Length: 410
Image (spheres, rainbow, N blue to C red):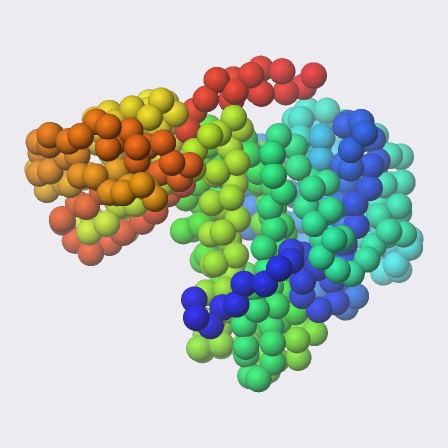
């Protein structure tokens, strides 16, 4: 982390990137609902997408582009309607969006990536999306404010916009990586329910970009859950326009590793922000499993704990019912001996051991309540069976989650 400098900013932090937002009236009224990310210099693109068999039209459009050698100039994103389960009309919307942008900047419609988030099964008004895309191009601008407003325009049930930027040094050149994302509900590992866009001015081989992105997803976005639902629209895009003018990274050397570490920081930061902003959430809920037999088991257990509705309800109720966490580990599919396990509650208020080697411990309920009252809570589990570890993030389960999702279309 000492070689990674966190700076203020988001998708406009890196050289050559502009952004914009507009109110196109896709579904929402009296708020911005479309965003643009634009690179002055066409950029290489990599992507990771939902594992849901039911894939939204923008996912199919973007994947075809990032799987090719096509350079990308723009990303256009709308909120309100997901353009999922929309058939040929949905794909036509992607095409029309690309054509609208290309009519202004030149080039091919396939140089434009698209993203959509919101209600599944509704059609987007083609004229509104095209007009919105052209309006975005007229408003595009450099600077922090433009990037921040773009990050707000892609929100649905999010309560906070999410953005971050870092800098690293490669070959004597400053490389900047910025990002924005949205996600609060329908979030579950593989990936989560999210749209995330990472911009960079690094010079790097496209295949290595894709390898780095696919690699870091496993321990970041794939380790968060809010409600057990995997979206039709999950998209993570990485752009690299080369304007930092660093020596191009073509092998997995120390420069590649530094870039990969910076990308990991970006993705982990945003993943935790999404988990903390889960629909109706009042706590970020983390489970850290250490000294497990292997990585696979550690990940299974950590994700099972934060994904358990009973565990999430206990966190909401500040209930020191550690049995719920052990139960979730037990049905996760991982194999372990409960007589080797120690379990702790951890937060800024302290660390409390509540279970040791197969038996409960006498602990101070008031101290436990104090620890569980903090905004960020960790269930720390020492397996004492190996040296593998994994961390997963989620949130508590509140009454507001049901309220939000019971009237989502209205």
